[in-house]
Amino acid sequence: MNIISPDRLLAMYASGVFPMADGRSGPLLLFSPDPRTIIPLEDFHITHSLKKTWRAGRFDIRYDTCFERVMRECAARDDTWISEEIIRSYVLLHRQGNAHSVETWMDGELAGGLYGVALGGAFFGESMFHLRRDASKLALIALVERMLDKGMTLLDVQYSTQHLLTFGAKEIPRTSYLRLLEKAITQTVSFSD
Image 1 (tube, rainbow, N blue to C red):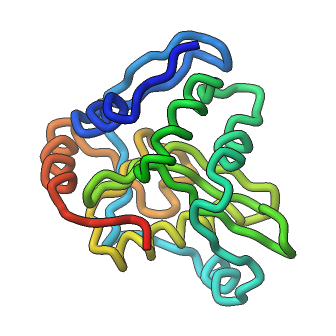
Image 2 (cartoon, rainbow, N blue to C red; image 1 turned 135 degrees about the vertical axis):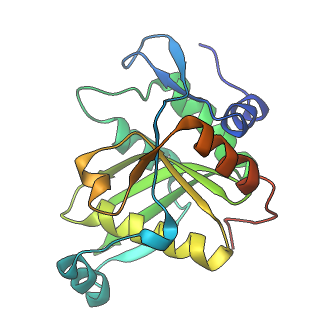
């Protein structure tokens, strides 16, 4: 089994490319979609009911406490692009400090979360999952708050989905995306505390 080195992964993201496996055990393919979907941080939208859930504080937010488990939960669906090769590659990137998980916990159990890659002022959201209602949405809210607190500027979510559109996601031409990316990765920002 091949593993993508952390340096190679970061070089891919810095050039606007990301890998996905062709199914659970298929070969790795590289993507740079046009249009590209981002969530402009200044336009991030939270529904009234979700704000209420966020304020209720029933979920605990944690970062990077079970990165590999979050990846495996994201992969635990019939149709996945997260192969074992992808998991092992991103776990190495996590150990290096560039891949992160945002986790929602309830009653001491993992309830949902997301993972992605941080590079400069950019965060590349890879996948999310939930075991309890709204758990992945709350992880996304926590991600955006952390990015704003750190002064990060680009939240790349790669492809548009109905779910992401409710948060203010929008498609932009690849050329526009690459300009934003070039600016964001030069920021001196640390996603971690």
